[in-house]
Image 1: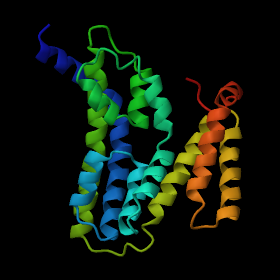
Image 2 (image 1 turned 60 degrees about the vertical axis):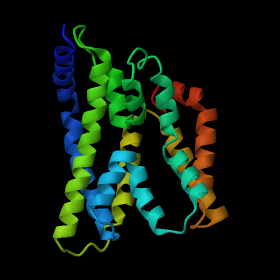
Image 3 (image 1 turned 90 degrees about the horizontal axis):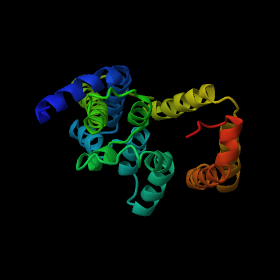
Image 4 (image 1 turned 90 degrees about the vertical axis):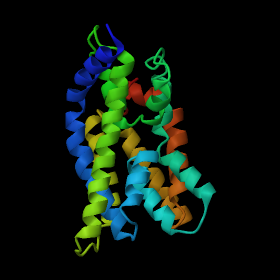
Amino acid sequence: MKNKEKIKIAFYAAFPYTVPIFAGFLFLGIAYGIFMNSLGFSAMYPVLMSLTIFAGSMEFVAANLLLGAFDPINALLLTLMVNARHLFYGISMLDKYKGTGKKKFYLIFGLCDESFSINCTADIPQDVDKGWFMFFVTLLNHLYWVLGAAIGGVFGSLVQFNTEGLEFIMTALFVVIFIEQWLKEKAHYSALLGLGLSLASLIVFGGENFILPAMAAILGILTALRNWLEKEGAIASR
């Protein structure tokens, strides 16, 4: 089979798996683009950040970091905590990414929750190249997010409307993520641990400084209790 034909078959096999992601990423990306515009950024910023960061919730956080004082250490630690789950994603994908050649670099960069879920669970036909299939799943999901951010950035710059309260998008995003995880879990030990540790950090460190200690504590304790939590059905097993 010629290489071009192999690539074409892989694209057509991957595309249907990404269609549901398109709807979600498009509208969330539009909200992100409008949110960035409401903070005073031009449409170029959400597009470039979506292309180079591609970290979903962290991009919303990064928007506020850009407006604050220059603090690279805090930004690094916050990014690590928000996206710490990708450490587990990356480890579990080591075998999957074997033999993908140069595509591996982009597969690592573009790994997100949705691409991880598809590439882990998809039943790839034997006549479809696994590496190209995973590449197109990752690429399409990435493009959906960039497209949504571009539309939102341009729309926000062209249409003038009251954006007061739009910053609540980020809060709503995390609330939705929390609810989705709550519904997926058989037991809720991990969610309750997260809530309890966040509340304790809020009391000890105050509203301005509680996020990093809370996320560090959550990461450490959930990592230590991972095997037990998997047995209890409180987090998804490998």
